[in-house]
Image 1 (cartoon, rainbow, N blue to C red):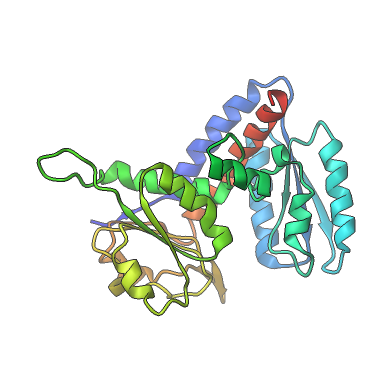
Image 2: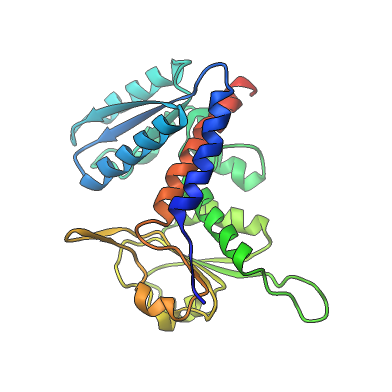
Length: 288
């Protein structure tokens, strides 16, 4: 039977734990978000982040800029926020309209980079050192853990040895990199698959865990999924009044063992893990 991975319920439990930890802190952590432009999806995401932070007792500040805001102006604001002790986390909402995201993110202090995109945090992850990991990647891993809970990993008959799962990540290198390392820590066989790969269907069909983040509705259909696989749909596309993912849920539901819905799967988990990252950043700054 298919198990729908309820990101809202799992995320709510995480936020409650964060709320309890924040309440026990002498000084509440604070998140500053820089939002450039008028993209409706970005504004929606930030509204969700604001609500989650306020519910957890995390102070939230939003800095809005027009589409054509000079890059140096954003960097100057980040440098100002870097110096503020009451701001323990900084997030730049991506994608940026025209500004260079790499240069803007590089201006954030690594121990305040709650999105986990700074090169220092990515390097720490690669080297197995403490750092801040992508909230999206952490949210995905929590969903995969939930799938394991309801369907334990396969063991070789008679040996008790857990068979290393094969993981296929369909998306960009930037998206896949933190996931590749997190899955590798669990001894999984991980491959990033380009969504335009001629062998896409063959590569997804052999994956025990399939993670997709492309922004192309219906990219993954049931015939491309291994029976019993865990499928994490991260894609979001607005179609009229609906938000849909990259997975054709109707056909995949009859094949997969676990599926994260859109909406209600990876999105709420990312927001929940972001609040946890803000808390972690505050603790890192207190105890470097």
